[in-house]
Image (tube, rainbow, N blue to C red; front, side, top):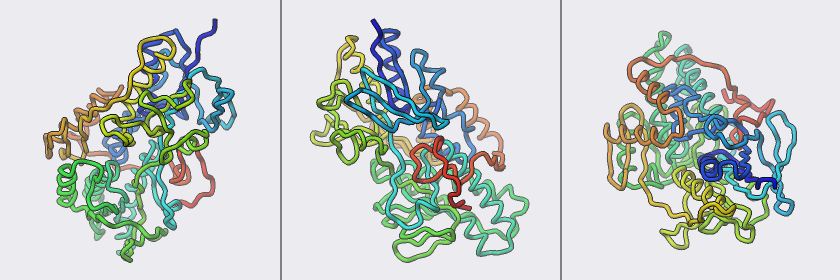
Length: 440
């Protein structure tokens, strides 16, 4: 008899852990197929360190074929799910079409940038959801500092040395914190820096505080570090319009800049809404076993799924990497149980706290609810990331050591151009938009 086929769509935190768990539990008892646009799992929390040159880009990627030995990787981006015929349609990296039949389906397609109906944002903002975007942003920041230092036009130099980050959540806070240190170091090394202005960073959020989704004590710590570093934190503030010359804030103030980094949050991948199943704020409704109601063969978890929070009846778990990774393990166990291996279990989450890397030796953390700041929080943060990464730990630690001992190279690699990373793209590695306006 042929083996049952389990198809996992997406290799983010949820998809990777699902495949890893199934590989361990099922072995060769079932065919495990992982459909993903790239051949790597991306460790998103360390992406800001790639954008400022602390980590080499490959450090935050983990090979799927190298770490998931019993899983067959199919390169492609899913664009259709036929529940009746039990097939998933996809487009491969070269534009060809393909289909995968399944006996069990796990949807872990993750999320994409959340766009708001603000004029100019889609055209002139830089997203921050993938490796190409981080590589591009590092080149862009380096280029702006170099051009600001070389020009005799003081207004143009000030605009190029001004960097605006919208969204003071986890990602935006880390991008601003790391970015300010990066531009300060670039300026100190610029031999052409004559009368150029000091780099100016603004962090905006409509919320009343930074890190609004986290413990208020973490917010206070992060806010203090950011302001002491010279970052202008503007809470209760957003962008009204973006143009090539700068941004207009909702209070009417115009900020001349060539850099707008968009970190306002995420929304479920559009594929989720096209499946034709009940949704909760764009996410697939599942039960406590991560099963889609009326479809026992379909599971969903991570950012794609509205998973009941059993610790808070009536609510759903938030879209975080910590939840996604743990849900992936539970989904793997429950898929295996549906195939006769082990017993299924509900998803119950015990919060271990959060960590925020603020650059240098600074951090904010609350492991097990204990608030930490400064050097100790920085050490806990890096220790957590090393423990959470499924690979490359030694290489990441080596990059951190080298960064502490020697200056970073201030050079542009030129590997990714602006049209290759449109803000509205859900898969920067696959999407290409020839002729899109360059954001320089």
